Length: 252
Ligand code: ADP
Ligand code: MG
Image (cartoon, rainbow, N blue to C red; front, side, top):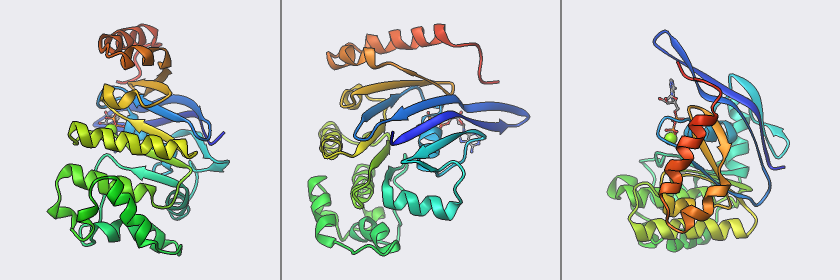
């Protein structure tokens, strides 16, 4: 098993009230899987990705990636582990403003003493349709172009696992398709991929579908076929069914 999430809970406090952004989530991901996570805004998707990336520790529960307990690693160890093994595409692009696109893509290889490979970086940028922007700074680019640069950066170290948080959200249809097809090809070469998305078009690339609501997660792979055939209604039916199965309120 590449990723094991065991009873992970993240409790946040807002004012005097505590609530569970992630509520007792257990989940396993095999090597080479392609999983989509859907769910409304605020349902805990980004928090869950952060837990898997080791960028955030759970309040309780445990997360291991390739046998390493990322839920208790120091910040320093987890950033190194993430840089070497995980490609993380954050919801906001997270590019360094003072570096060009090419320098941004090469940054993690440089930080951890791997050989830089500007040709590979340029090739990734070409495949994402922004090859001409390698010398540009993030502020000179549109949101969609920044997003694609951030995806190129995540692929640079040949990770075992890609965690992509709404990677197509600010892209036009064609760029969105290019991004999802690139992620599919990366997946075909053996990298596990987790994509959080709101978009049906992006969701259908996954072979497993998970649905999050109020911090809880359930498998909804049985709805993938209907999504593929364009029945958005299937998705709303999913919400209702999920609501019916919940064990009671998990947010205050
Ligand atoms: P999603 O990605 O599904 O939109 P998030 O994981 O970003 O959801 O957030 C889940 C819930 O946790 C939301 O209600 C959000 O407002 C809340 N939240 C996220 N980060 C914090 C934080 N640092 N402190 C308090 N609440 C937070
Ligand atoms: Mg989010």
